[in-house]
Image (cartoon, rainbow, N blue to C red):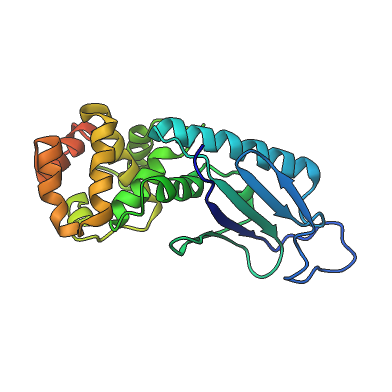
Length: 252
């Protein structure tokens, strides 16, 4: 049995339901809901028991999905706090390395796709990548998107909707080698789609091997590891990926 690693996920919301007075920051976590991998602390004035049941069940499904998708054996316990203090953000903390993320809008709590859960599980079992493209790309790769589970198709469709033709964003070779990640929804889609493309064509274990290299090595050195692992340099892989996604577009 793996040692359970305590991590904290904090979800905040402005929504206030059925209370005569607003709870203070310190007194909000008046109920605890336990599952195999989550300890959910919440305020009954903000979330109903039915909502917590739904949130808890989904989080366990996402936990299992991430383990299966990434071939992990994670058995950590994630401490989740749902509360109504402050502005509409979701914060995710990992005590061991200070990881934090923030998202707007309360609906994310109910519509969780596992992105942040994946971050915590990956960081705990594999380690934290020093490369933003690899860190975010692997989390996107791990997301459970019931609307469009194919990461490559999601990227192509989003690109067609907003970019008209081809891919006009920052080249992924620059994003990887210069650690210059495009923190937009399109950038996240692109990172997840590229890692999915590599997984389909070269095997997921090679993708994981590259991620592990990105934990201890600087971004500008990843080019040599990419060529060693995939037997092609990053620029050839970038072109292959582009033409796979947009066969009728011109690659420059």
